[in-house]
Image (cartoon, rainbow, N blue to C red; front, side, top):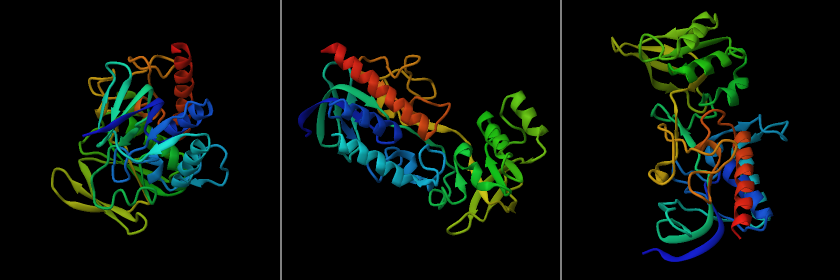
Length: 317
């Protein structure tokens, strides 16, 4: 039985760069937001978002020496709390946006709100190999833009065959001495222009009909083991980095049938704003951005959502 509902002007679901930036802005507007930040044991609702699984962040403005991902998110959280945001370390189990006030439930509590900011993020699809998550930030990555710089002059591999994988591989040739694309089939799924671009790049090699079945190394990736999908033969590939580019999954299952979304699951927002199809509900960050997926763009969209939310509330009252 859920506890008696507690009411808030603003309730924020998610606590990555988007959610915490929205918390900072709405708290400074004296809206006393509640941030339901997720559970530490959850892979889809990790408090602090994906940066909690990241080691050094070198591309967030204001930190010329770099900063560890968990420390950066800790600073976000502290700043939001300083201005009056409160936090609940639980996972949202259910929502009802069909009537006012808007309603949200955790496993044993019910909340009502005048407005909701959805910032539940997205997760990179992974290979499902042992120790894969442990090696993220230690040779394994899901973001070439974030981590390519760390692999200057080294040999690395990219898993995937779509446009995103080719884009990652081509980008990584700016740093790596050699990039090997690993694909389960004998040709790329990418568009022709992207396939041509990959084949024309002398730094890119291909391992066809191959899949990664093992990650080598303890504290740091030292190589990978490939399996031929036709013959079953195993082979070693000595690389310093492995970039997984097999897709992303937005954390939007909670909002299925509640908020409008693309076929891929990303929430739809009104062009140039954070407005969803439900009045008073706003979305920001990777949950609605399948193009940039950076901490800084997520933070920027969190700011947008907070300002949209504040102005919407003002108009209602």
